[in-house]
Length: 162
Image 1 (tube, rainbow, N blue to C red):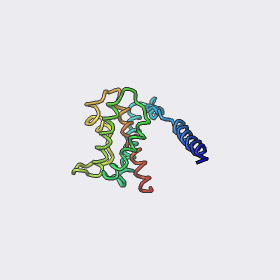
Image 2: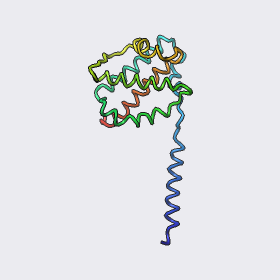
Image 3: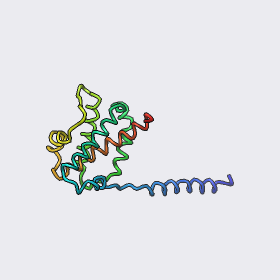
Image 4: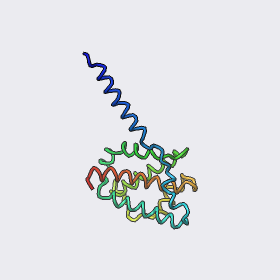
């Protein structure tokens, strides 16, 4: 086979090109940067914004979310949210993921558990977050929940051509 070197060259070039494309992708997004435009607002105003965002994504998810569809995309959702860095705050991620899933399940009345919209942020803080998360990390946790809901919606709406 005379052109074996050509195949090796083409394949290695293709591999290296793909690697370079992947390396160009930004992989370290700071979760706190998502909150940068509300950091100077009062706690009341920033909570109002976060509450509105949370409810917006819950409303968007309501017609497209099912546990079955979520199970098909959950790994992809993890892959996207892994791009967001929270240094030494794994407990925020774990708790935020659990709360987001619980909200979505209640949204579609899983196991006869119902979620009435709009959800009050104070309710989430008081009954789901405050007992586990440090006070200084509550806003980051809420942002993580919103990020998770937004990512799930992104995949589900794409799958449903919304």
